[in-house]
Image (cartoon, rainbow, N blue to C red; front, side, top):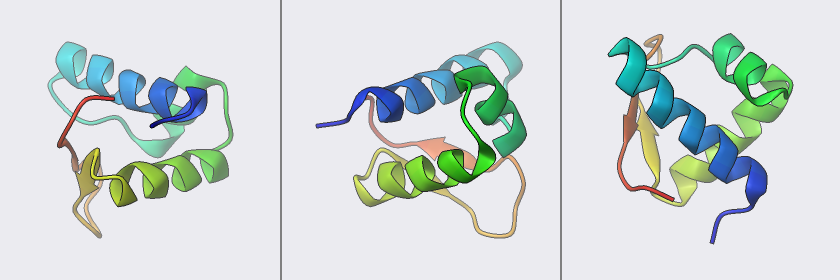
Length: 69
């Protein structure tokens, strides 16, 4: 079960991808969710560990949504 911030981050990514046809950058996620980039990294790790998303290491804007929260 995801907490509120996890849901907010995942929802932001989904909405951004739908609108822009590409993944958001960490800076954009931070601004859109009103959290720091450090906090974004923490929640991205939580979402990856939970199987909600996957990222390609070393590639910018490479977030794949695997399941919806």
